Amino acid sequence: MKTLTNDISIKTEHETLSSIIRSRRTIYANAYINKQIPKELLIEIITNATWAPTHKRTEPWRFIVLEGKHQEKLGEFMLGYYKEYLSEENFPVSQYEHTLNYPKNATLVAVILQRSKRIKIPEWEEIAAISCAVQNMWLSCTANEIGGYWDTSEAAISYTKHLDLLENERCLGLFYMGYPDPLSEKPKSKRKPIHTKISIHSI
Ligand SMILES: Cc1cc2nc3c(=O)[nH]c(=O)nc-3n(C[C@H](O)[C@H](O)[C@H](O)COP(=O)(O)O)c2cc1C
Image (cartoon, rainbow, N blue to C red; front, side, top):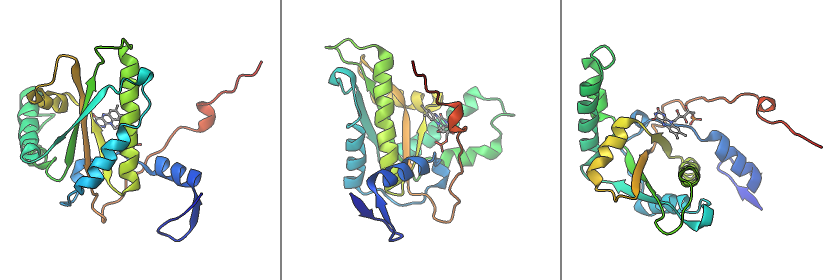
């Protein structure tokens, strides 16, 4: 099927998919502007996450959207956390303001691993499934010109201790989303040459 893109060129579906996959970048929250992601779009992005494959269909996840005062609270929490755990050399006073304001324009989604009580699956398979779900979310963001960033830092995970997770649940980080400043340059990324990653064995 052909689709009409913004630049009026015609792309096949596979070209569009390759282009979205290869243009996905980690866009950190300091690049986001003060523009809300519409609720229906946010739900669509998270719904796409749930279309990831799962072994024995366990769907081992839950996504908690942190709204309201959470951006402010997360900034305060990270400031306190880094002050406590990092030396002044690694976390100088000049970074306090930046840390405090860092999440202010982000939509925050806590990624929760929810182990099935019914079906026994190795944990790594459940984490693999969640990683597929996060990638779906990330690619959906890219397709909607929204930046994304998966923060798996201890500070981010510690923040979610306030969320009263159940005993079969564990937070695997925060997924940040936001509209990047159109004036900021898109981060560049590169990958090792493909011949170093593929070998074809034939017998
Ligand atoms: C599982 C996972 C965890 C990540 N955690 C962090 C993190 O805690 N902090 C960070 O700065 N980037 C984190 N990243 C983003 C990577 O640093 C980023 O994907 C990598 O630099 C490649 O850049 P790209 O996403 O633009 O291709 C994480 C990525 C993945 C897949």
